[in-house]
Structure formats: structure tokens, C-alpha cells
Length: 209
Image (cartoon, helix red, strand yellow):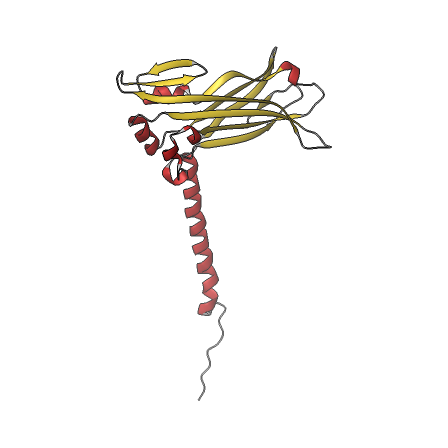
């Protein structure tokens, strides 16, 4: 005798359940990756402010960042290794007939060092030196700048379309040569942020929140 089982809409072969489990596994993986990416971003540089304004003698830039020094960087400072940060800004003009023209470029650097004799941190930039009692105060002083002139008035034409390329980073190229080998994100030295902003006809621009 052959017994048959009536088909039920609630019955499902074992193989049919696999796609559901696969989707759940994939969702979990994406969630894990998302959390990992969030942590990686927290270890980098967040750009709080980036804006430009036309001034009498040219174009001025304002920016501020937020980041914390990774442990390997703090350890290097404690051992007497100076740390460098640099910011670069370029103003480019759109050209339909050829590659865009760079009309102005400016750079700025900061040197952060621990002074064991005075037990203070010193920040040097543009020939100026300032000492701080704590590392937090020293790092806060190099997280941004205001009124930084990045272009001369003669370099800007009112009938052009311009945009800004900006970058701010921990400059490992100025570290002692032996320390530069193999440095990167896994070692906690990859601190950097880059942005591009279109300038308005009056050369003003502001980073969208």
C-alpha cells in the first residue's frame, strides 16, 4: 500500500528554507561591517567646519576638525618623536575645453613635540611657537584655523567657476625615515580627511552639515 501525504501550503522543503537563512546571515554580516566602518571612521578625522569667504586681499579659508590621537602616536610623542600635521588647499577653475586650471595653492603645517625638560607640549607653525601644559590643549590648537588666506585677489576672476580641494592629515612623510616603513591604518597612523567644495559666484562656500 502506498500512503500519500496531502500537500499543505505550510509545508516547505528543507532546501527552501536555505534562502531565508542566507538572507539572515547576509544581514548580520552587513550589520557587522557597518559597525566596523563606523569605528574606523571614529578613528579618523571628522571635518566640523569648512568655509571660504572673499576678503579685500583675496580668499580666506576657515576649518575645524575633530579627532583623537591614536595610542601609537601618543607613545611616539612620549619617546621624543615630533609629530606633524599638514593642511592643503587648492583653488581650481573649471574649463570646458581643457583640464581644470589650478589658480592658487596654499599649505600649512604644525609640529607637535613633547619637551621633557619643561614637561610641556610645544606646537610650532609658521615660525610661531606655543607651549601647553597638557596634550589635549596642544592638539586642540592644531585642529583648525580661521582667516587663512589661500588665494590672492589678482588670482580670482569674477566671470569664472571655481571649486576648492582641501585636505588635512597627520603627515607621516616628515617622520624619521625608519618610522615611515609600513605605517598606515593598521598601525593607527592614518589620520586624514579630504573634501571638495564648489565656490559660489562671490567665492563663498560652506560645508553642508
